[in-house]
Image 1 (cartoon, helix red, strand yellow):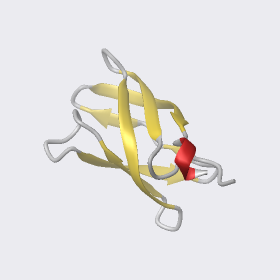
Image 2 (tube, rainbow, N blue to C red):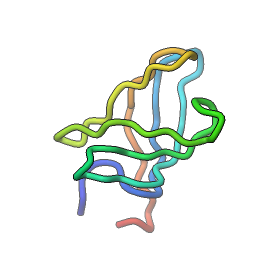
Image 3 (spheres, helix red, strand yellow):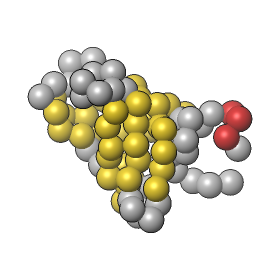
Image 4 (cartoon, rainbow, N blue to C red):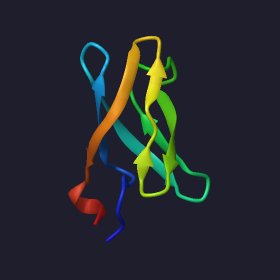
Length: 79
């Protein structure tokens, strides 16, 4: 089984006033990115975060505050 976030997972953040949840639409280990579908960070509803060795996802700074990845929930179908 692959470690780290996978397509279809829910990525959970803490920080800002309320925290944040986004869905992982694509993971590119080679480029070191995790693409998200989300509702608050961009008008387009999409964001891309850095993925570092050990499946560490970067902190996101936005006009709404600073967010840290608390973890992710794997989609049961993506095993």
